[in-house]
Image (cartoon, rainbow, N blue to C red; front, side, top):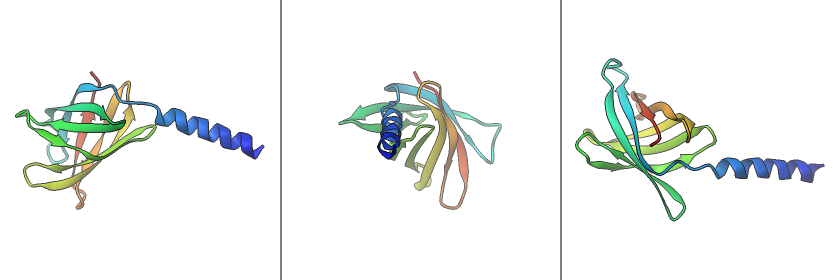
Amino acid sequence: MRARAALVVWIVAAGCAAERLPEGRWTGEVTPANHPDRPSPIAYDIRYEGGALRIAIVGPDGGLLPAHDVRLAPDTLYFGFNEPEADVPLQCALAGAPASGFDGRCADAAGKWARFTMTPP
């Protein structure tokens, strides 16, 4: 019985890990917590390199900010990047799914945050 239960857990975990983000240009918005009425458009370049998920945030000027520590869990996308103006490290946790997109917060160590959304191509 234990072997059967372990097999079921392994199959479920393998199925969740196999889900991938569609590659290409994703769109979205970033909304600062202190200005909820001022969302700004943003884009993300999503690709896989050697099996690893890579995200580059595309700024309004077309510049790329590479994300690090990218990890896709069954219902959350995690990544970090350095905010370009103040070079402050941000950690992101966006809830959702690859087919429908993600929505959540990116926050600094002091707890200041902005809301980020991601919509697949």
